[in-house]
Image (cartoon, rainbow, N blue to C red; front, side, top):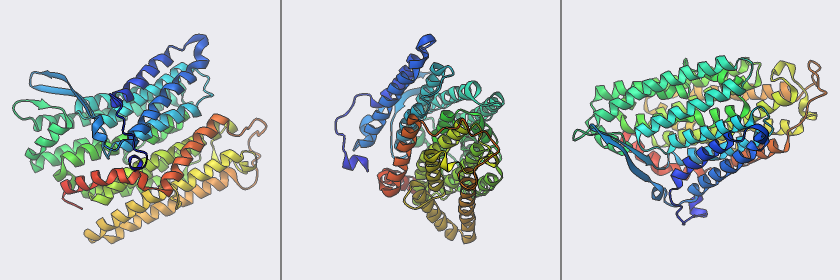
Length: 508
């Protein structure tokens, strides 16, 4: 654990609130950089996102995360209590760290953005506010508000700065995710008012968890379904996944990085934080359905990747497959399953950032992302080829990189589950997913960067990665290697939380 090695014992007052305020102020300051000052917007956004990242790293160094818990009564009237509560634990710390890192590196990677950059970078920082709020919220009202905050800047990032079909993709993204969040809100109201004691409906996580012992089995099963649907669409699950490839394909590169790297994890985070923690009997009832959905997503996503011609859409479908692995890990309802589900969320966040950066850079440099039109570009774009190969190998689970430990742990945990239900043959689907993943990545790499140099496009204008792009990609790749060679740096945060939750669920 970072805190065991580089313990940061000095307590920064209101650190969690600063993680919300700094990007918010940064978004406002960047938005004000209009007119002739637009060229400076990237520097303003870079400074604020860098400070936020530094604070998130300091939080990782803190030996006792509970010292930064903040709680203030917000609204208390008519039998309803809503509070401004921020906290970080073993489930959320890696997501807070990941958000801080990826927002800053996305800003660096997008340094050449010239189309209304003050709007572009302001939206990136506004997204950071919502993402940080979701992962630090300790009150369901605050959680839902921050959940909705993330939708707005992403909608405008796609609609204003996306590709040719950006308006269609943005509207589809908003409809799917907003409808799902409304269903989620109904489930939140159910558990909050169901856990109310003394005539007070307290929206805090702690109060709802304390009152959840009164939930009946039927109540848990029904409400679990509502909440699960709301969260799983965000992951996304099959067949409610069709918004994701369109959103990724049309979104600007920074938008895709944050969408895949951090935003999709809101869904799996919500399932663990709310569904599993509060509704353990509902989780046990829905366990076979979760396993089926996870397997379906793994196989369907990997199989769909083989048929894709657009490099970015292929990476988008690979996210569906990898989040399917998160689903089956959560469905194990065991210590190791939950632990490696969270670790896979973190690992996929880092790896998907590299994948979408190289896919976006290919489109900007070459002028197309169509795989059949490419070929033999490694000699002309050596830096891009190197980072693409690194990202592909990390995503297919090469030993020594972070993706290997995530997938190994999930398969190990799922093996235990399959043995316990006397259905060992289910593990075959995990292995098939890994086989397909290796196949489509290596095939795409061969057709894109190796082989005979393409003659189907004009190569006179192509250029390799710029310095900001190399810095951003190099930093993410370094983290992938660091946590791949030393996975306990991340896993040690998860042990206490996963074992405690497994006890609640009645499975170890």
